[in-house]
Amino acid sequence: MSNSYTAVVRQEGNWWIGWIEEVPGVNCQEPSRSELLETLRITLREALELNKQDAIAAAGGSYQEEPIVV
Image 1 (cartoon, rainbow, N blue to C red):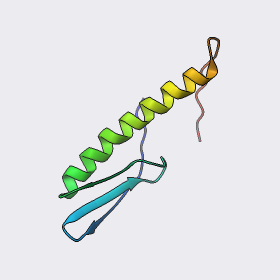
Image 2: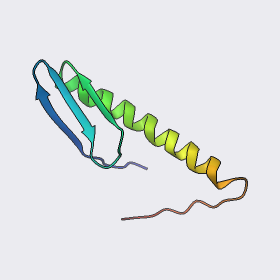
Image 3: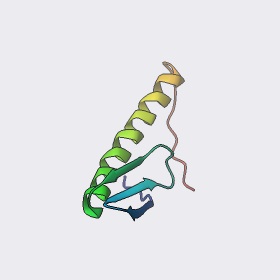
Image 4: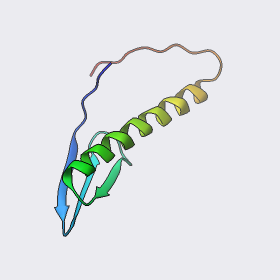
């Protein structure tokens, strides 16, 4: 499944900074725009995987997964 997220990016001095609108805590800075976008992709993937692991652990041994479309 492929999801789409929104990166908000801006240049500040010699650095590019950015964050993902839909996922709090996913923010990065890099010396170039292309590096920033790649780092945001990696950081977003890691954050989503950690959130998934946390949700499954909180559910305990017996749970069901249901897709939610917004």
